Amino acid sequence: MNNTLVKGLAIIELLAHSDRALGLTEIAIELDLGKSNVHRLLQALVEARFILRDERSGRYAAAIKLWELGSAVLSKLDLRVHAEQIMDELLALTQETVHLSVLDGHEVVYVHKLDSPNPVRAYTQIGGRARAHCVATGKAMLAFFPPPVLERVSQQLEARTPRSITDPQQFLQEMARIRSQGYAINKGEWNENVCGIASPVSDASGQVVAALGLSGPKERFKPAQIKAFAPLVVSAAARMSRQLGARTSLPALR
Image 1 (cartoon, helix red, strand yellow):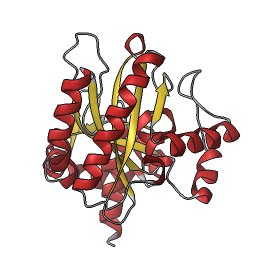
Image 2: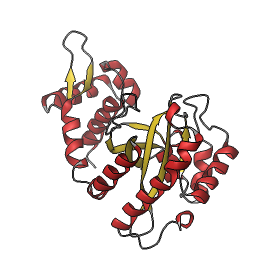
Image 3: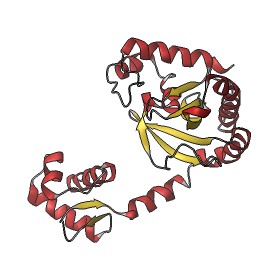
Image 4: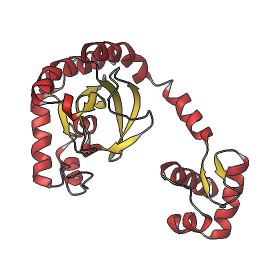
């Protein structure tokens, strides 16, 4: 692959994931590149409208063009097409925010969501990310990974809240429980005030490709309510799996 292209993409990815604008020196240090090289790449990316430069501070940030491109891709994903009606029905049944997520490394990416009509609800955005081991959709997908993969993940757990699972043995036990019951629960592990429940979605090959879930304020996700939501979420995820060509349910969902 063209080396200049790779460096330019690295800059775009760095700025897209940064929660603030970055200066030339910061970018060069973060990517271990020469400042003159980075400066040339930044100029080209600004001209192409992939990034913006603040004239007063001289700092750089990702441009809306990245969102436009990402939205164009997301709108074409088969997952969203298959999920739309199912998510509508799940929202109508539960009145809680419905998420469709996929995995990207150790993070989940929210590819679609329907907001709860309640004034107090969980706030996320399409394209947003979260650590997979801290949210229900992420745990629902991770649980069906091969044991060697789960073992590696268990050694790289970071806390987001006091409720986040960071102990490797506890994490592996949680994965086994999810496989057994067919759904995962987030008990304030990403945001202390937000809980969730999710179930995995598989494709025609039997691979887990996504997760469908609900999230909302912890006051509305008490154990009794989670117990009531569980069969609805599992059923919705199983329906979506069948629409994607899955011929058999995942072992835990049969």
